[in-house]
Length: 349
Ligand code: ADP
Image 1 (cartoon, rainbow, N blue to C red):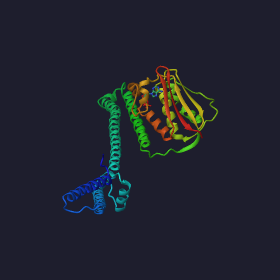
Image 2: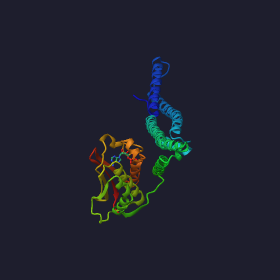
Image 3: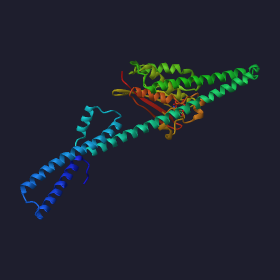
Image 4: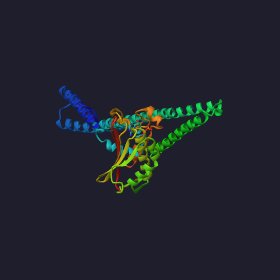
């Protein structure tokens, strides 16, 4: 039997007490020291039981409650007021110990989850800092190299001066791009940015992005095409500027990782409440193993190619943040050497 509550414990001790005194009474009767009377023994037992039971119950509850109070103060991190103490006593009820051990276990579970969360956030922060400094280091040391070569005579050498200045400019552009992407991602992650939603035609917006990226696409010999009739508007309800950023990132990737003479197709599919927007290319594709990590910050399949193409490793992380801030989803399907399809949903406008 478990003595997990003061009522049961007081009951048992009181019963044992009356058994004990009844035995002494019987012994005295047997030794002819006192006369036998059933009325006396019954009255005595009842009174003794009531007295011991209530006395013990109160003492035990008070003692246990004093200890429990301290536990609750710790687990609830607060100072209990008189009213709260009373409320706590009522909620705990008869089965105090079991209730307390359950509450303490729940508290321990919560704390464990909290610690795990903090540990993850700390690892995430450390990894982020390491990634950022790694990304910054390369262009800075390149710039340093070009400048010191120019200063130690290169400036007068007509074969290298212009070339080295152009390379310096390229590295500065890379740093600016990185800082811009970091700025976007940190404001999206802080949760402070609100999506400024409005009704707009995403078909027209895509046309605008096609034009914006036209020169880079031409340089890579990539053709942009629509999967639908390009004169039928596709109305969505979203943050236009942010969705423009999503399209720029996805279309830019389709050029960077596309094949020469390739094509990128943007299609819209009606899905009840939403539109599904697909950006598909016939480029280099992505191995299955990389897919689950693709939207992580700084995750790259081919680091060398990404850096050579001026990638910051943050493009898809930004895409995911923006789409999730719209409470929508983003997905990818891909086959190596065949191509990739990135898709996301948006609420119809
Ligand atoms: P990056 O700046 O490196 O392009 P992203 O976050 O935009 O960073 O993309 C992450 C990685 O996903 C890229 O480095 C590339 O390896 C892969 N990737 C993204 N889009 C495509 C695509 N359309 N085809 C093939 N690989 C892609």
